[in-house]
Length: 142
Image (cartoon, rainbow, N blue to C red; front, side, top):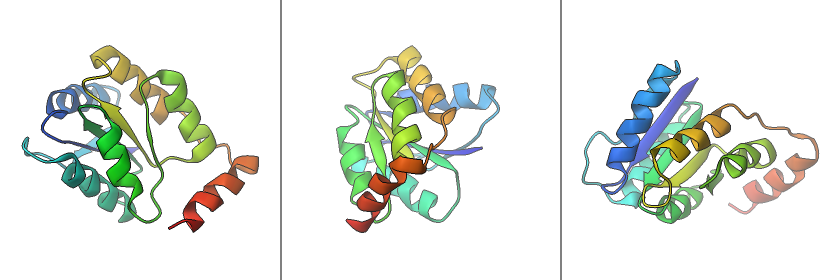
C-alpha cells in the first residue's frame, strides 16, 4: 500500500517519526512535504491532490491540532478526511466513512498514539453496504 504523508511546520517531527515507522511496517511512504516551513493548507492540499491523481492509496495529514488539515482537505472536491486522536475513531472512520485521509494533531497525540491511530486506520477497510448511503451524500455535497 502506498501511503502519502504531509505536514506543516508544526507537524514535521511527527511526520518523520511516522515515515520511519510506516517504512518499518513495509508501507511505501511518499512524503509530499519534504520542506519544513509549509502552512497546513499547503501541506494538506499537496496530499489531497496526490490522492486525487492516484499517486497513493491513503493519506496522513499532520499539523499542530489536526483541525486545520482536516478543514483544508475537506474543501477539496471528492475528499473525505477525518480528524482523529484515538485508535477506535481512526479504524471506524475508514470502516464507515471510506475516508481517504486522516488528520492528526502533533500537539494532541504523542508518537505512540499516532502510531496506533495510523495502524488502526491503515488496517481497516471500508465496509460499504448501508454506509455507502452517507458516503454518496457526502460526495454529492461537492
